[in-house]
Image (cartoon, rainbow, N blue to C red):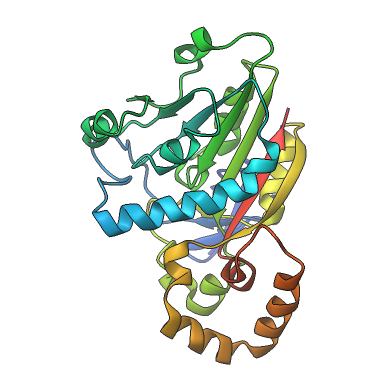
Length: 274
């Protein structure tokens, strides 16, 4: 029997039969019908990382900034929404005059103080950064793996851009179009109850159009920890030989993505401006 569900991205009502997922043919996302709402103050979200995990996250952020760098200019401040364990903040220090983060988790407050990064212990609140802005300041926002946790991501982005007329936003999300989800389906580690949807590049473009934002860049990424698993990746190359050969060609002409970014395409990014 068909039931209805409101898409968290385009807010259109969709019909579904499957009890676990529903595809939205308007914004091209895959809705997780088993997702739950977390407050992220005392549950969900990231914990303080152990040394090796922190190192891998830092390396991952450096690769993000390889993409972001070409859009950085003078008189910008960096605002990281959903700071987690703070690696984007740490990586941004040498590139921006000032960096601020927003993270509701109470567990990470002391961690931020120890690492000397300025993070507000709350959800995004523009009034907290207003004193640091002037009319010429451009805010460079980062939302890495935030939208998939939010039950109205378009409103979140609208609230971000409405207060200031100069904004650039880097968004990164997990994709159902990537190789890992295609191979593993709902057994993939990124399909779980904290993620209300998995995206596609078309979903990101849909959001940009809805907000009347200009697309500066878009493409694919993969976590560096997934790239390091040589044994698993070797069998992936064997299983997908044509994809492997196409990746070899595309990588030769690419100067901002890793080989595994292009091969797996498990995560998507878009950079948009007001």
